[in-house]
Image 1 (tube, rainbow, N blue to C red):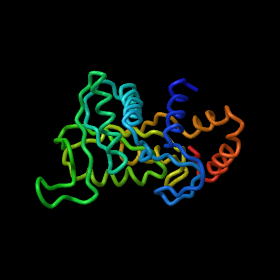
Image 2: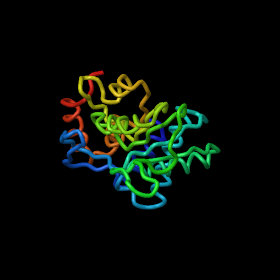
Image 3: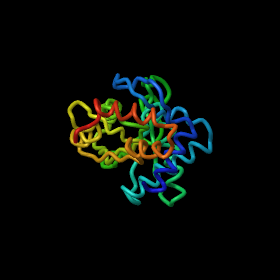
Image 4: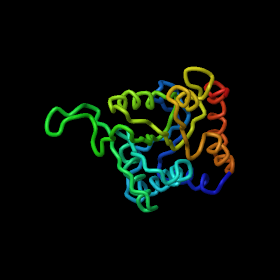
Amino acid sequence: MEAYKQEFIKFLEDAGVLKFGDFTAKSGRKIPYFINAGDIKTGEQIAKLGEFYAKAYLEKVGKRRTVLYGPAYKGISIAVSSAIALSKEGLDVPFFFNRKEAKDHGEGGVFVGYVPKAGEEVVIVEDVITAGTAIRESMGILGALEGVKVAATFVMVDRKEKGKTDKSAMAEVEEEFGFPVYSVVDVYDIIEYLEADEKNAENVQRIRNYLAINGAKA
């Protein structure tokens, strides 16, 4: 495994973002591990997270200027920190996020920050994709922006789970909406990382058992 992937997984674990136990995902599935960007709690942590997203962005998108969209609530801090990290790399990109409820006073509307114009490209930054539910919600919200195209989505972890079919949720999202979905690491990287320490044997087995049922077949 590449060194930066090990560094990223260790960062997630140290920050309490990567947890093991019994959880329920947004999809309703019972899962043995959880990735929660909401557990990023300090300036240093969120700055570091933004650096990982910026690295992935520059690797996949390059220096092309897009607009970062962070879905409320967890995506908000990811979008802000990623924009800051990209600016330090010489790429100044605007960002925006949505309100859970449209504001009916002041400037009004559902979006906060830069609102993309027709012809501009948007990159969604999320924490994780399980069954693709959150991305479909985001596409419904972004559909209000006429002439705006989503160029890509970036997430922390590809869970390698099937979506509505036996294909992975990420593959289904790519096929359904026509843009690539990138992740910094995937669940098999996490398994490899955990296997380096025997004390993680139980968590590794629980994740493997889960993937045997819910893992994507393609």
